[in-house]
Length: 154
Image 1: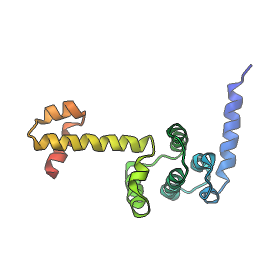
Image 2 (image 1 turned 135 degrees about the vertical axis):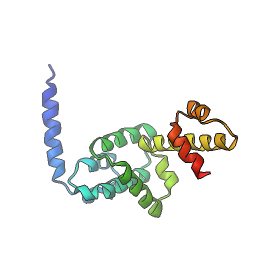
Image 3 (image 1 turned 60 degrees about the vertical axis):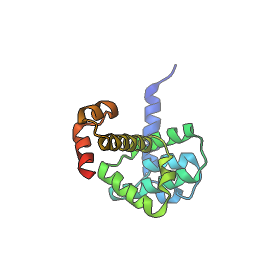
Image 4 (image 1 turned 90 degrees about the vertical axis):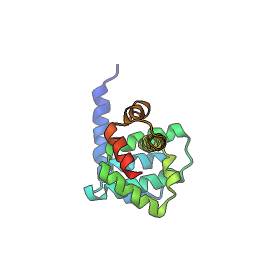
């Protein structure tokens, strides 16, 4: 007979133990588990961007298949999520020290950002061809407001 509450207790104990660990002690590791657990280790609120940056460095250094990347990335983002502004700050910092293309190859939220950029590129081309906002919105699933912003940039 399984007792799910024991799994929860074990997980909570593990999380409390990890919070006592200094995340900086693990960033040189090429261990996928260490990378995933960075998000549950002890860090200050103002260090969140730096922790994720180091996590991304670890992920690009390790040669993992896409399924393992997704699993590790999903776990990481469960415990450490950034606001839109923090993500933008992170991307700006990443551009200074890493190949952004390498980061964009990582799964999950960066895949979604890539898809969003693709939709916007299609919308821009449709605007250049004179398509209506309604039609562009229907095809790309972007809001009219987003398309309007793109039109102003042309």
